[in-house]
Length: 119
Length: 112
Image 1 (cartoon, rainbow over the protein chains, first blue to last red):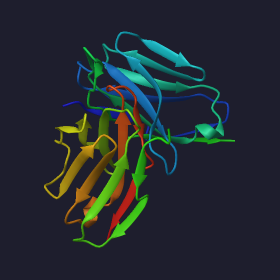
Image 2: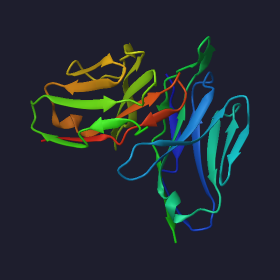
Image 3: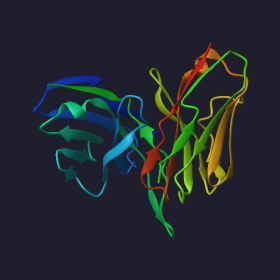
Image 4: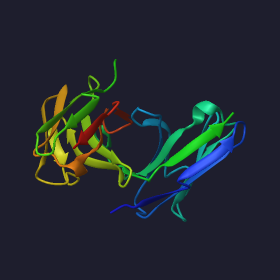
C-alpha cells in the first residue's frame, strides 16, 4: 500500500519568513496530493491540493510543488503569520474518473508537521 | 450548512464499557469517513461509506469496532468493549462525489 513520509516533524519560523514542508510517497500510481491544516481542537481542513498533471499550484501565500519522477511534493508558505501556526498534513491518493465525476481514492496521510510562527 | 457535526466532543469511559460516537454529515454529501488520530499512528482511515453502504472497512482495528450508517444524515461508530488503547480523537468527515473531505470537530475518547 501507499506510504507517505513527511518532514520535518516540527518547524519554527519568525513571522514573515517562509516555511517549507516536504513529503515523499511510495506508490507511483498516486495522482492526487492534498494538504490539510489542523488547528488546536479542530478537524483537518483542506488548504490546497495538486493533481499529477501539474507541477505547481499557488493560492495567495501558499504553493505546492510536485515532482512525480522523484515522488515528492512540498508545501511552501510565504510571509508567514502567527495564525499560520498549526499542524499540517500531506496526503496522497489515487483518484479515477467515473460517470458521476471523480471516484474517491483512499487518502494516506503523512505524520504531520507542527508549524510555529513566532511574532 | 453547519458542517459535519460530531457528538459527543469528549467522552471518558471505563475499560469494558460500550462507546458510541455519532456523526451527522453535511447534507447532500454521499461519502462518509471515520478516522482515528493518535500521536503514534497519526490519521488513520477506519471505514468509509458511499451512499450509506460500507465500502472499505479494512482500517477497522478489531471486531470490537463497528460502524453503521442507517440513513444519509447519520452514522455511528461503536466500540464494545472499549480498551485503554482505543483512546484517541475520532473524526468523521463527509464528501460530495469523492471530492474535498470536510472534517468534523472530532470526539476525544479517553478509556480509563
